[in-house]
Length: 206
Image (cartoon, rainbow, N blue to C red; front, side, top):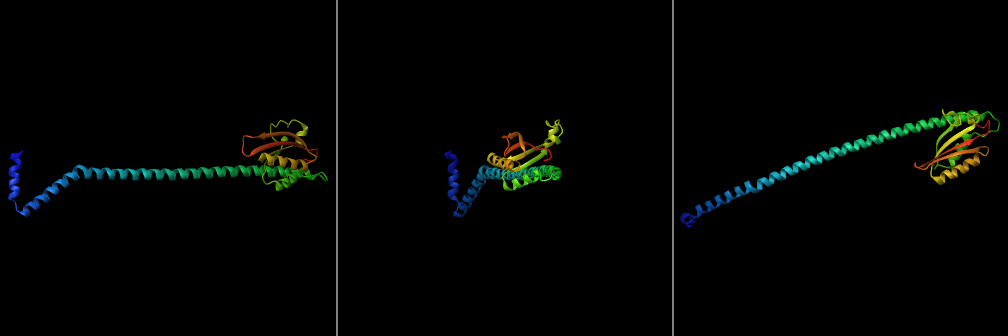
């Protein structure tokens, strides 16, 4: 090792200051190139690949988020349309029954319209919804359809809280003193609660 370094040292000592400076610059350049090739360039490539991967993942997540938002918006709109259609059907049924009740109750002198009584009570109880009003005998396959008195049975379905339904029934009982109460069904598994009642009206009142 000494035999190799001794001639090299002798040659460096024989160089001028300018030659030594140029040699130093060449050594620094070679070391920098080696460092770049072994360490800096691979790290830069890895960093660039990682940034590209993150950008790709971010774009995919943004696309999936937009698709999810559009799908939820579409489902919500479809559900709202279905609910509106159902509500219109229920309202049409209620209106049709109220017209029939109005026609039937208009003939007897001094008789009280059940439809008018229901509307008057609903104005005082905004927390109770009138879901359905039908004559029990008007439904195909109804249990009371076989009897002659089924024509005077009114089936009413209400929804609301338990306390509101209780207050509503109390008001309805006072508004229809001539009616007889038949059967109650309470659906507690739904929110709000749904209560179905059957009222037997005297002949000529319905």
